[in-house]
Image (tube, rainbow, N blue to C red; front, side):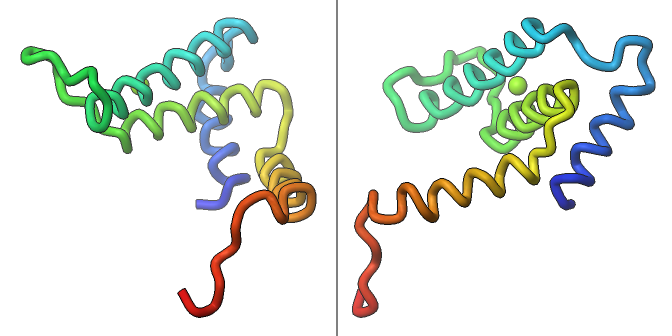
Length: 108
Ligand SMILES: [Mg+2]
C-alpha cells in the first residue's frame, strides 16, 4: 500500500463518523499513548522491565501499527501529505546529514 492510499483508507474510515478526527490535543495524547505502548513492548523484550506474569502479551508489530495509525490521523486532520513529508526527510538525510555516520566500505 502506498502512503497516499494509506492516508485515504484512514480518511475513508474516519469519515464514516460525525466527528472524523479527535481534537488536536486529544490526537497528540493518543499518539503519545501509542509511543508509550511501543516503549513498553521494547522494554519487555530488551530492557529491564519484563512483562508482569498476568499481563497480556503485546506485539511490537501491533503497537507499531497503532502508532502509524495515530500518525496518519494527525497528518490527515492537518491536511499533511506524508509522502511529501517523507520526501523532505530523505532530502535532509541525503544532504544535510550525508557525512554524519560512517559509510560502509566496499570490502566489508
Ligand atoms: Mg497500542
